[in-house]
Amino acid sequence: MSPDSVTPVSPSPDSVRPAAEVNEQIRSLWLRAGGSLSAQEREEYELLVIEWAAAIRSTVIEAA
Image (cartoon, rainbow, N blue to C red; front, side):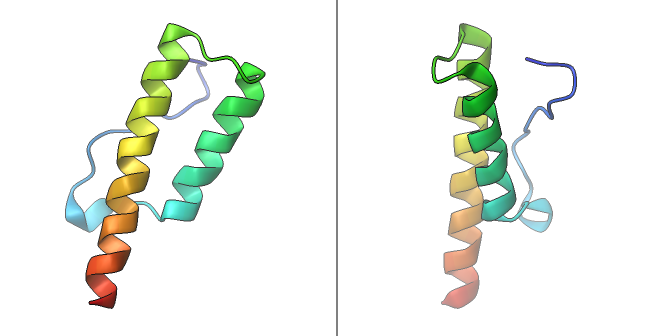
């Protein structure tokens, strides 16, 4: 993981980042990696996807 990247953590319901922000970080990771993720980048990607899914869920819950 690069030193300037933010390691995502399991967010609490009150601290979920917007899905668009997490998505931008995912896109940035793929661009930095040149389309092929190392094992460490893959781990970061998986955590970001989990965080993105939580953000999407919170949006759906708010809409309901």
